[in-house]
Structures are given as C-alpha cells and as structure tokens.
Image 1 (cartoon, one colour):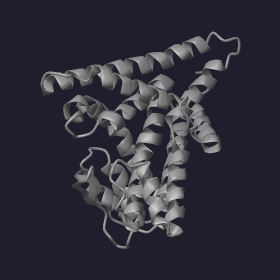
Image 2: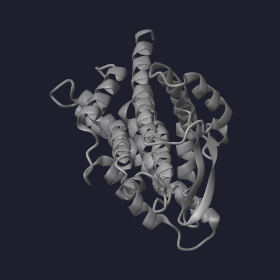
Image 3: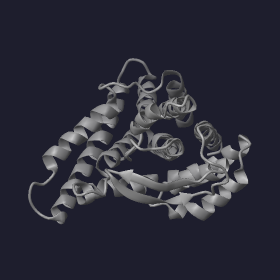
Length: 319
C-alpha cells in the first residue's frame, strides 16, 4: 500500500463514523451470508453420521475462506492496474470499511437505550432481538439492557478490533477472510442438532482468529475505563478474575472488563429456543443494570477503538 496501513485503518473508521454501515442486500457481508446459506443447504449431508457432518462443514469453511480471500486479493490486484495510482489504496479502505461496524453497534445500543429510557419495553425487546440470538419476548428491563451491553462488548472484538487487527497484519484480504470466518460462526456455530458437528469447524476457526484480538481488546477496555473515569482498577480486577469463566474462550475478555468498569454484573440466565441456559457471571452487582450502562458500553467501545488505532500508528513510526 502507498498509504500506511494504520492511516488506511483510520480512514475506514472515519468513513464508518460518517456514513455508517449500509443496510441492504448489496452489502458484501449480506452477499457473503447468502453464499454461506446456499452452501449450507447444498453441503449439509442428507445421510451419514457426525463424522460426515463435520467433514462437510469443514469443506464449507475451506470454500468460503478461500473464495473470500481470493476475491479480495483479485480486486486489489485489478485496482493496481487502474490509471490512478491510489486506486488500490482506496479499494482497501472501502473493503475494510465493509468489515467493521462500530457505528452500527453504537446505533443499536442508543436505540435500545432510548426505548428503555422511554419505558417502551416491548419495543426494546424487539430491537434486542435483532442483535442477539437469545429469546427476547419475556426480557425485563434489566435483562434487555444486559443483552445490549454484552453485545456491544463482545462485538467490539468481532466487529471492530479483530478486522482492524487482521487488516494491519495482512491488508484487506486478511480482514475480509476474518469477516467471512466470523459470519460463518454467526450462522453455523450453534450447539443444536443441525450444527453441533456441521458448524463445529466454523466455530473453532472463529475462536482461533479472535484469540489475540480479544485479549488486546480487554487491555484497551481497561485503558478506556481510565480515560473515561470509570473504574479501571475494578475493570482489571474483574478481567483477571472472571474472563476465563466465560463459556466462550474469548467472550469473557470483552465482557469482564466492561462489567468491572461499570460496576455491574453481566451473564446469568438466558433462554435459547425456549431452553434455559446459565452463562457464568462477569463482574459484581454493585448496582442494578440500567439503560445508562448501555451508553457506557458504547463509550468504552469507541474509546478502545481509537486507542487501538493510535497505538497502531505509533507502532508504525518506530518499526
């Protein structure tokens, strides 16, 4: 790239902040989702045991990752032959812009906050249902706010820091590959009868790719808590105490410091398809979760993102 990768990453973040994530069927991630769904329908085995399901699910993962990376790389190679010297750089910025979603996260959080603050619990349940996989019809106000906070915290990794991290490592093709892996996990990584084996490789690949970015994000959240005058000391304490107890190998490293910074307790009982599940607690219930804590999570998300970009830029100066 002629433009330094940290500058390109800042440009993509600025573009997302200004324009947001376009919500339509032409969005590359939406197209990717339709492609994964098509492969799901055609590769899911109609016979055979769990081993065959796992093998076919692994084949799906390999196909999606290979095509996603190759498509992004091919577009960039083609752009380098354009008469304008900066064409490939602009394309890489646009591809990264499609891979990150801080403004969408913030918008969802603010909408749920406004609904809860306006005593519109029914509307808040519906809006929460757009961003989580759990059942939302019976959520009370605290659980609706908790779901929003957990989503903002976890998706700071999935939707912001991880794609930026992989962009800095390998440019837009690697960021696109990560977004493909994360999309597969969100579509196939369920522990139900259909996907327990067929979606297992998708879930494992996503876990591996998020391992380092999740831990970077945890430290960024602690630093963000300090800058925002939340409780950074407690954020670090809860991170060290609770993060490893999360059922996801990475989810706790996002949720625990946010819970500690805001002096709330995340986790607890959730319902999925009518079945009761308990998720390990993150943090201590020093105060009841309230709509205002959603705004706190959004502030932490944005501050952590700016810190990551700043550190990436400073690191590039001393390479």
